Length: 250
Ligand code: 1GP
Image (cartoon, rainbow, N blue to C red; front, side):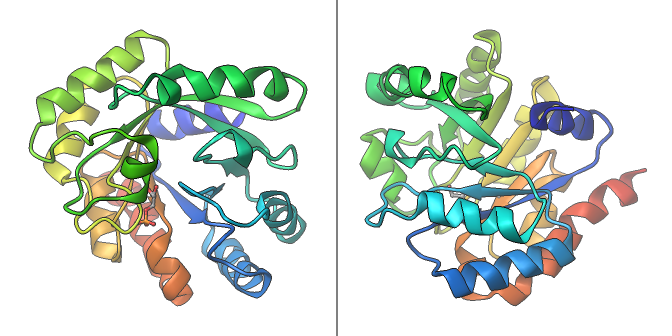
């Protein structure tokens, strides 16, 4: 089964999934080793690797280290075409559909496509949507796009629906790393009831309660990065909060 199929299957059977985001710039190899050991124990479903802007050339090394320590699928979550590593299992092939910057809608993808074709990476076509999280984020600045206002669930829905109609297989709603407030459960619920593709949600999720609220509202995959770089010991509670939801709803 492909990684995309496992996400779709999990979504259909209401089995919620947890993705740990590792920024190769912010985590040194000791931190990665500690986080990945915790991730294996906590039964993390995926590890995402990437960042809006990386200053160090560490993506390959980071992916290889994670792969050497665990069997958890590693997906690239690239801020730009320089963040591709053939050592990962797959790539969230993102189109920034909430923005109107052609470079992030299709330009970077055109540059990456012929190179990706030569790798074994699984391609996961993903509609990426920035939702206002209360503070200006690196991703919004670097992509030169304006996030969708937090309360505008109909704009978010229409954007995601257009992505789905264009054939994108996943929708990722992101308040941006370190957002002041995560995507609201109201918005998650509105979209998840109306879309047929799985919904990934991340940005500013700092507590097990917030992770729980995101999946309870309808997110299929929750992504957490920032807070776990600071407090890796929170990982197990976060994952449990997400995995519990399906059990409770059965
Ligand atoms: C950011 O959705 C991810 O792109 C994760 O955000 O680092 O705030 O958890 P945090």
